[in-house]
Image (cartoon, rainbow, N blue to C red; front, top):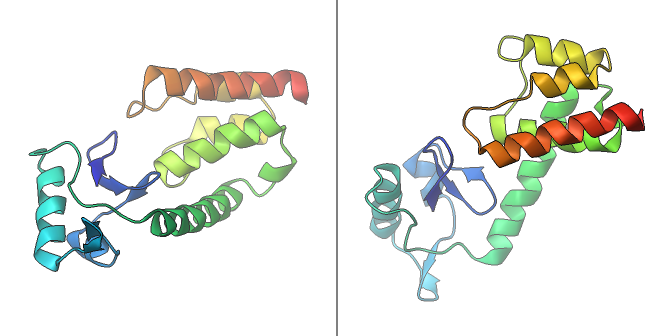
Length: 155
């Protein structure tokens, strides 16, 4: 377990654990054997309260892969709910949009009205200008902006 960019306890490739119960539902191990519930709760609490940067327990690779596969399905569903035509956009725009949804959880009209309007209009420059997320690194924001700008030439 580790804290994500906004401090949410996370495991694997960005799978948020919003509660201790979510951590308990996973198959954490310690030195090759199943971790006890108290050990999982202790790890979760220590990461959540920034006592340690990375938890001591491990989640087997197969379990991490399964979480990622499910998260990717959810991300695609949420992307298509927000932007039903997303799969027809240039590939670089799809990558940027997928990253935004994976990171933010969803793209709502309330939180992203001007960004979504630009995307729907195929205004990739406008979308790029409105794609900043304060919770991620400048490099990641620049990558997203670049992918959206690449869509200008791909469309």
